[in-house]
Image 1 (cartoon, rainbow, N blue to C red):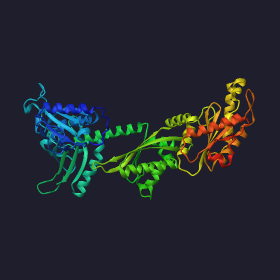
Image 2: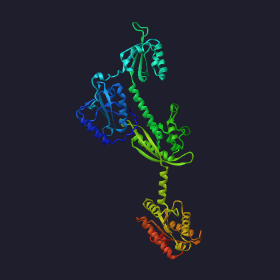
Image 3: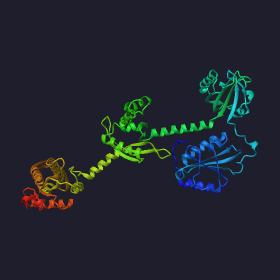
Image 4: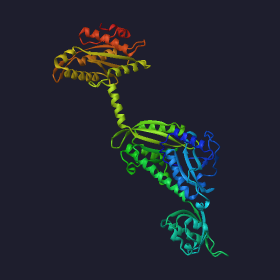
Length: 572
C-alpha cells in the first residue's frame, strides 16, 4: 500500500482531536499502529491510550473476513488521501458481529497510521446469532481432476468459495471455469505439470457461480498412475484481496503518472550515480522546446544503453545540453550538495535552445531519502521563470538607468562610485562632473522636446569620449557624472575631462533647429583620506562651478586632489 498519491487536505489538528476523542470514548476498542505499507508496527509512546488492547499479526487486513477486505482497502486508501476513513467489517475471530473499523493518519505527529476496531454499538447494526450471518468464506480449497482436466471431485471449501454444488462441477472441464485471458497460461502450466511431473504454480481468475471471477493462486500436483491415486490434485488459495490492493495501487499509480504529465513543471529524477530514472515530457518542453523525446535524444537509459560506457552521463548531459556552461556548473554543484549532504538546493540557470530561444529556468533539487535517512537519489522540479526573469531585468533596468539618456541614474552611479571607493586597490578613482552651459535657454527657445534631444546627444557623446569600463551617469537635469575606475592619477582624469569638454563644444542639430553646445567640468580624485561617494562628487561639483565661472569650457581639478596633481594645475 505504499506509493499512494498524497492528496491530503485534512487538518492535522483535527485528526489529532478525532483520535483522542475516539480512544477516550472507547477504551474497549482494539488498536494497532500501521506503517505506510499497511503492516502492523508498534504504537508510539507519544500516542495516548486508555486501556485499549493491541491487534497483533502481520497486517490488520489478515484479521478481517475475505468478503469485507475490499472495505478495508477502500478505507485505507481514503485515509491516506484525506486523513480519516471508516467502514463496517467482520473479524475472523468474531464473524457473526459487525465491527466499526477506523483508519486515522497521524504520521505528521507520530510517524504511523492508527487502526481502531470497535463494536458498532448502534441499534440493529450488530448481527444476531452466528447462524444469521454467513461464516467466514474459506480462502483455501482443493479439486481433483483427471488427466484431461475434467473435475473428479472437490471439497466443501471449494463449493463455499465459488458457490457451486459438487454435482454441478463433476465431469466439467477446468478451462470452462478459467477467465479467457488466463486460459493459455493455464494450459501451459497443465502441460508442464504432465510432462515434467513437477509441481506447477500459476495465478489466474476462476469463475464463481454468479459469473464473477476470483483471483486465485493454483498449485498442481501430479498423482496420476500412482498406487491408490490416479488424479491431479489442485490446491487453490484466494488472493483476490491482494490483487484488489494491487489493482488499487496500479490505479493510483496511473493517476499519479497522469498528474505528473499534466503538471506545468518539468520533473527529473536521478539516482546517486546521477543516472536518469525518470523525466516527464514537460521537462523537454522547457529545456529543448519540444516534448518529443526522440528528437531531443533525452530518453532515460534503456538496457542497451546501460551496457555502453558513460551511458548515464550522456543521457543526463543530453537532457541538460541547452543549459549554458555556467548553468550546468551551477546545477552540478547544487546536485552534488543534495546527493552528498542531503541539503535541498534551488538554482536559476540560463537555457539556450537549439532554435536560439533564450529561457530562464528555476531548478528546485530535493533529496529522496530512505527510511534510514540515507539519500537514494534526487528529484528536480524545473519551472520556466523566463517571464519573471524578464520582468526582474526590466525592473532592474528601470532602477539602474535613466529612461531618457540610457545613462546610469543618480542612485546607481553613486552606488557604483561607492563600490569603487570601498575596493582595496592601489589605483585611483576619479569623477568628472559635467554641466551644460546655458541649457535653460534651449528649453525656453526651442521647447522641452528639443532639450530632451540635446540631453540624449550629450549622453551619447559622453559614452563615445570615454573608455568602455568607465560609467556615465545623469545626476539630474543637464548634469552628468563620469566615473573613472582604476586610473593611475589625477592627470588621466583631467585628460578625460578635457576630451569631454572638447567633444561637447560643438553645434548639434535637433528637430527644432541648431543648438550650440558647451559644457563646464569639475574633476575630483581619491586621496589618502577615507571619503564617501557624496563627498567626492561634492568636490567635483565645486570644481565644476569654478569652471563655469571661467566660462571657457575648460575643466578644473578640485582643490587638494593629490595637491592639484602635484603641479598646481588647478584652474581656480
